[in-house]
Image (cartoon, rainbow, N blue to C red; front, side, top):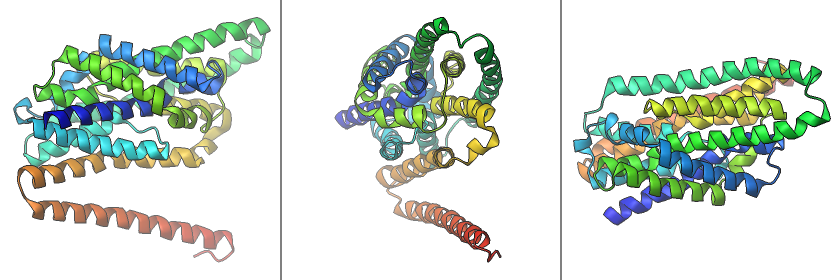
Amino acid sequence: MIIIAYSVAFFFAMNIGASGAAASMGIAYGAGAVPRRRWALLLCGIGVFLGAVFGGGEVVKTIGSGLIPSSLITVKLAVIILSSAALSLFLANLLGIPLSTSEVTVGAVIGAGIAFQSFYAKKLLVVVSFWVLVPAAAFLLALAAGKCAAYLEGRRFRRPGWKKGLTFLLAGAGFLEAVSAGANNVANSVGPLVGAGLISVNQGVIFGGAFVALGAVLMGGKVLETNGKRITDITLLEGTSISATGGALVLAASFMGMPVPLTQVTTSAIIGIGTVKRGMSIWQKRVIVQMMKVWLVSPVISLVIAYGLVKVLIDGDLYSLIVVSSVFIATVGTISLWQSVRRERRSLHEHGGGI
């Protein structure tokens, strides 16, 4: 069981690296500061490892013992939490969607806590509030920065001499954001191991950081393309504003021990820049709608999986799993049916047969 716990944790860490690649070097890659995808992924790997080692400890403590009592986290429960979060994240990576590892991990931890009827509700509310406030702050700051960038690029930064300097500045900002990714996200893979007493905080950030970096290099290309290319075109100055804003916000949250959705922070900043350039029409792009759906559903999915596994594997209560799974499937089916009806009505309306 201990071997399984380590295996799942490090597999999860690699998927965190794959998902976090877009949240760190995706902007620099999309704006052309780091033109080669392989170089962008290598810089991401180095940055997340350094961030994990030197700044990941406080968030590790929150995941390991800040949401549910550490006395509940046995080796078996750590495996359940990690498996639930890793499965949710792996499915998102297959789709090329930059999913928040913090959301799926916290959802899995809370699902286990609900199964044992013991979790820290006040701490959870604080964490969830950070999920809303930090991306909102990133959007507003990027919106303001985008307007300033448009003004400056029209007056000063079109001279040939500025481009090289801005290129290096954006690459540095992207690397800073990679450091913030390591500081905040490594806890999601090793926090349950620390809570179960299998590994110390210092050992966790080193080994976890190494596997996060490996995942970024080997598996991060698809998500890198999603954040860097598919949302909106980004100039060097705009990209610097996005990466610097995201990195600063996430590092601040890391120092406070708050696991925050780095991908949401970065993507919210990108959308802020896109709103300046294209208006509200950018919100209609399919990739943004798809990501928002995954963000909303992902913590619920990992919560249900963790709750069900605890009931079956620890409590031996198959009935509760059947009830919860049925409610979840019915909810998803209802939402899908509602969306299907809306699409049909829209289609009829567009063809002159509106209801």
